[in-house]
Image 1 (cartoon, rainbow, N blue to C red):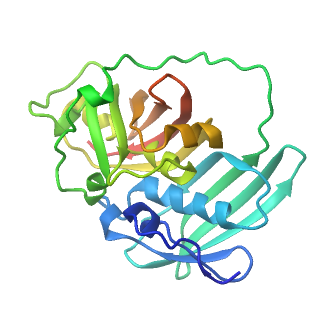
Image 2 (cartoon, one colour):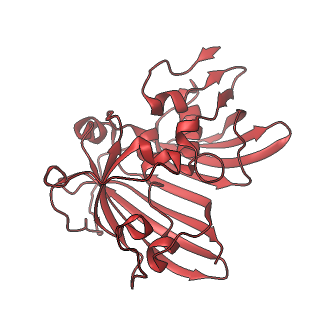
Length: 275
């Protein structure tokens, strides 16, 4: 299979466009619209890597998890992805991916795809309390970093240093409604990217800007294709908080929900920060 993977014109689809070469090998190019303080927004990188698996004809099931390790900065320009299934079982299929620029590895990832079955189900986490999205006005976000311009955000709490009166907070928790801008139907790559839309928790807790960078991000995709189809382009209810800050790192968990309280995804990430 040779040629572009995506031909749509939405900024997200353009940013995640890959060109297939030999089996499991893809090339792409960074998108300035999704740039962060240093290199691309981490969520778009995760979405690109997941796109490589979704596009591969060897994939046998829907994605259920992805772990991305940001090994080094991604420079503006072209990149190469190698995506290979390393084991296929009856229920799951395991992939390993490497993103490179020149001779340098920038990012590694694992993706697990799995066949979903009708089983007993229960959700122990609960969605945060929030007014309906359509009762709130979208927040005006800064022009920098650029990736913020690709999302509509309506903050319920925890806007941090982007708020009108930033100050230290007793908790790092944030809750908001979020969706792609321009609006587009939710799919697995877009949902994966949304698990990284939260401002670094160190900024929320201390009420000031700080240098911070995600080192590792794991996202668990609970949404079925039917859930995504029903969600369409409606806002996603999202909440995040840190567990521990110290020694230059903190960990951050996030939950994403439909408006009627169905879990779409949960994530956990480790973040490096400077005082």
